[in-house]
Image (cartoon, rainbow, N blue to C red):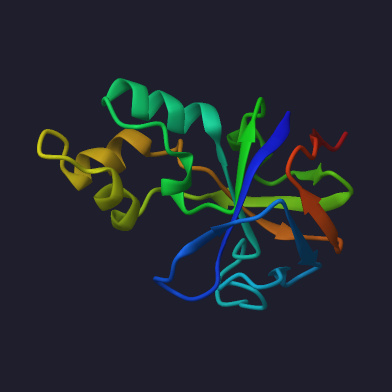
Length: 152
């Protein structure tokens, strides 16, 4: 159960950047990310998605295997994120709390749409599979390869 890839977007609609590690601040999120310090909705601090769900979608629909298209911050492998809603867990030494599922939006649907699979069908296919929104409980650094562990 690890972090396989890390991404940030510095401005709304801006380009996405891949990182080897990111600094996170309790209650504020990832330094340099567009959602840093925003408190308009719970769970905006950090978003996660399962590599396996993205890979299955790409395979099933003949798409190139590009997990960055999700625009989530952390791409994980080997952990069922839906099980972390309402629970505390750790990514490396950083403690997080799963707030809610990060349901697919029309932006994600449009990014994955094709002539044979319109955006609404993409959204429907990824419903309850598009990741997790979480709050950062402790400050620290999250690096590629960090373990994801459930709290007892």
